[in-house]
Structure formats: C-alpha cells, structure tokens
Image 1 (spheres, one colour):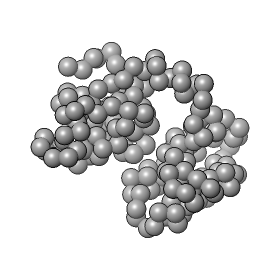
Image 2 (cartoon, helix red, strand yellow; image 1 turned 90 degrees about the vertical axis):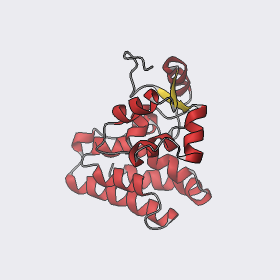
Image 3 (cartoon, helix red, strand yellow; image 1 turned 60 degrees about the horizontal axis):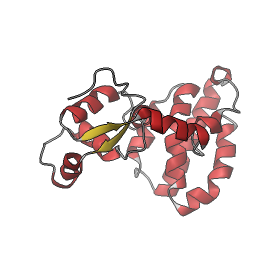
Length: 178
C-alpha cells in the first residue's frame, strides 16, 4: 500500500476518511504515539515538521504505520514545495536565514534560547499545556536542533491573539540567542 520510493520526511500528509473516523472512535486501537501523529496530520505539515512533535522517535516509522493502516495519504510533494518557496511562512527557514551560523552559538546562548522558548509557551498557554512542543524544545541540545523546532514554536505562538500580536517582539528577542 505504501510507495517505498516516497520520502516520508519531505512528503505532506492528509487524513483519509478512515483516519478521521479513527480520531472520532479510536476503533483501530492505535498506540498513543501513532495516534498523536495522526492527530497532528493536517494536510499542510511535512514528515520533517511532524518530527518536531515526537522528538527522539522515528517519525518515518510512525507515518509508515499510518499509511499501511490507511489512516493517511501522502499529498504530492511537488505541489507543496513550490508554494512554500513562493510565500514562506513567518516561522519557516526563511525567517532563520539572517541568523549567525548555528555553530557560533555558545552553550549558554542555546540554554537561553531554550528557556526563552519554553517560558514564552508556558506564559501564553499556561503550564504544561503544550507538552509535546515543550518536550521538543527541551530535547534540543544544539542551535540547529532548536532551529528545527522554531517553526512549530512560531506557529504555536501565532495561534492565539496575544501571541500573534507579540510574535515580532518575541522573535527578535529569541533571535539574539538562537
């Protein structure tokens, strides 16, 4: 059922009717981690972006399991990538392009960036409300790893009114140490 030549990290996935039914009924008895990925599949995130929500896990294996069960389908990667290149999202790699090389950041700066990201999420959403994102931030040990989590952080911050309003200010402060 799955195409072995499909690059799961680059492909974008959407829920099938069976996947939507599984969200409502839990009839397939998916393991919690697989179900978490299914819930996060929205037709816009690539496998690489979904990986930020399950740090330390093989997202390709989780996506393969969902594909095999018919819960998700891969969308055309060719159609998704040019659109992203034309209009990059505010939290995308384009926003990070002006930063110094990740290797030039000290351990203290990385810790400051990690703390800033965690504290801003906890302040905007309350303690322990975005645990998957907090775990991904906590698991990041290098500037490169934090920069991979940044798009999810920015998208999360922009998802509420006050976060969207303050995002430019917060981004500027974060970029001083990221």
